[in-house]
Image (cartoon, rainbow, N blue to C red):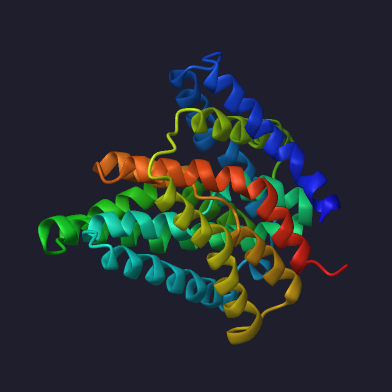
Length: 309
């Protein structure tokens, strides 16, 4: 575990540097928002497109991986939702809590970290997880919030979901990259160099942006944040492991990558959704902050438990 901890420490050190910059106001909220937009729309998109364009299609899609990951995620989503209903939460608030319990920071933290930890074999599984989270669970929360507020699902909601997916740069870059791969075309050298340079800013930029954004997060409702962090950091990888190692077994090396990625802390876009809809943003904020801090120790522990000595 010590070796894995030392290998993951630089990533969390960059997050810590961003947190320091944000908390001291050296990096303002406006600067953090601009950096996040740069990483999200440009640097990370360039990295994802280049990765996808250089991957054979056969190495990307794995039906059993998707089913096993979906099964484990759905179980934890259901557990968090039931616990929310027991506490007499309404549907939209329970949906935000369930989203905190299963949606990890796969794009900003997982992809750059796991490519370095596990090699390029991690790219395909991480992209599948990212696409599943965006297509299935980002759509599900919009539907649940709509049902909770309006009592029905309108066709307008599906238009909103579709447009949201089409405008999401991660979905667009994955789709374009895989399309390029399917045509079996080499990336021209100048374009490849451009993507390498721009994509190279994704890892430090994303990690710094995570830390700077955490500086503005509150630690209110700590007991709820602790429960949601437990779901995300322990229950989620545990049930994904059950899905991928027992119920829908896949290659163990691929399973280790997906299970480890399921142990990533709560994603920042959950807070953005909560803030956008005005539903428990402080709760999501606290879960992101607490789970990210705890994952400095829990993520290396889980990877060490999964990785053969």
